Structures are given as structure tokens and as C-alpha cells.
Image (tube, rainbow, N blue to C red):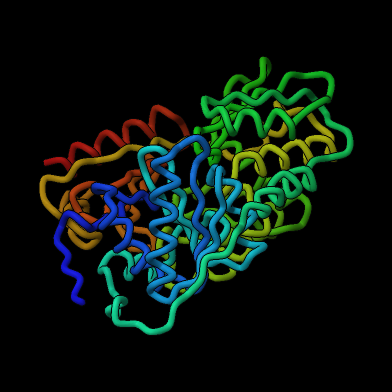
Length: 387
């Protein structure tokens, strides 16, 4: 029996692990077959109260098993619950399905590795319908219970301040209401993204402490405790300046690892703050309870660093080389390559430019000592790249 494919059964891997394209029985089966090639053991979870997500999850699991793959099925969950479960159950890839989309991660919600991305992008497979050996699908429903235990393990026995969680995602809100209770004193309002991976903090004294600055603040506390910190490439370079004050290191991991950032990825899994908003909240509350000083004093110790993030549409398909050449041609920009993309610098600050996989857009992170300079830097580069 020969399986034919065309563009209608392909799900394309976009930025941040998002799979785009029509989710049909054919595309779900094809994804399962490719997962068997890309992953030794894949964890597949789906959102609660969605018949569509449930059906797609079972289809992918069945196709992966027919292709000889090993999968673990976790029903009625959100992505962050799969993070802790994938580490405990030794799964090297994660697929989460909700009512309208599918997203893929490496173990613990890390970005996919370069090898995983290559297999998913090219659709490499070995004719799975002719195979005689079949894989299996394990029931992972009980693994959801590992997540709240992991968050509670990080919380201090006595809270300093009263945490309040705000999010538009009902399941995430209900989960956090059970985890973050009690305390007294200053109200600490944590605003979480719908997928539970990012969070900002608001207090009456400090105003908003946005995600990047909150991560920088926690990294600074790790340095003060004599520990290194793992951060993604797009985080502000001010982290290295902060680490140098304590003779510690910043380990950077890439969005598509080539294997050279293994130490950074391993540390990121242990720390968890860059992968999971609830873990970040728990770590902040632990440090806040164990260390002296107000939040205002902590923030005052950070380097002056502000970032602006933009998605820039390109006039034609370009890779990192083409982007670097266009910046260098202007004369004012110094450019160099990293594992994540192109760094463009001038007297105001620097920007990380990461082309998308299609090459028709890029993500721009501009960093400077003030928000005004960062916005100006981002605006100039955007105008140049959109020409």
C-alpha cells in the first residue's frame, strides 16, 4: 500500500514551535509518522473540554505507534503541566494540542533542537506503512500530578507578600489559585500569559516589572547566591554585566540547538524560570522570603537595560547572511553572527535579528539603556529591513 502526500497533509513548523496548516486526519497521521522519526519518546497532551483536540491527539498517537514510535498520552492538560511530566518520564519531545492549534517543544518546554527541527521540517520518514514493528502509547494521565508538586516544592514555607495570579486561561487560573495562597503584606500581582510560559509582576510601589526584567532580577539573585543562570539568546546582554559583578556565568541556549548549548539547556531544565511562569513565580517568592531588601531596592541594583521586541516583514526571503549584509551596507551597524541570528550594534545599543524559517519575516529584539533608545534602534532597523 502506498501513501501519497501533497501540500494539504503537511503541517509546517513556524516560530516558537507552532505548527501551521490545516489539521486534518491526513495531516495528523503524517505528523505522527514524522514524530516517530524525530523523537525516541514523545509526550502528547491535549486541552480539556475539546473533542477536536482529543481526536487529533489519539490520531497522532496511533500513527506514531504504527510507525514504530513510543508516545505518552496525557489528557486534559495545559502545556506547562507537560513540562515537569516530560522530564520525569524521560520524553525528549512534547506535542500539545488545543482547540485550534498545535505546538511542539523539546523536553521540559525547551525549544526544539536543530535535529528535531530538521526532521519535522523536511518530513523525513522511512515508509512507515511497510514497517513490521510497531511502537506503543502509554497512559500518562497520572503524570499531571507531578506539576503542582514541583511548584509547591519551590515555594517558601512562609510567604513575604500576598501573591495574586491573573490570567485569561481558566484552567491555568484554577491551578494557580490552589498553588499560590496565603501570605501577608504587600500585594504582588502576577499577570500570566494564556499558555502559562511568561509572567509580569505589578506592585503599587514599583509599577509593572515586565517579563524580561523579572527574569533579569531572578538571575541576579542566583548570581548573589553563588549560582550560574541559564537564559535564552534573546534575553538582554545586560545579564552578562550583572553576572560579572558576582564572578558567575550566563549560559545561553538557542532556539534550535546544534548541541553546543547542552550545558545551558540542562541548567535551564533545573532552574525552570525561563520555561514556566508558575515556576518563575515560585522562585521569586522563595527568594523574596529568604533575602533582605525591598523589591524597589532589588530593581535598583539591575543594570539600565530595556528591550523592544518586534516582528518585521521582509520584502523577500532572506537568511541570516542576507540580513547581515543589508545592515553592514549602511555603514553605521557592526554585525556578527551567533547561534541564534545576527547581532547588529551601534552607539545606542544592540539588536538580535532572528529570521523566520520561511525567511519572509524576522524577530527583532532591540536593547538599550533606555526604552526611548531601544524603540529608536528598533525603528531604524525595521525601516532598513522592510525596504
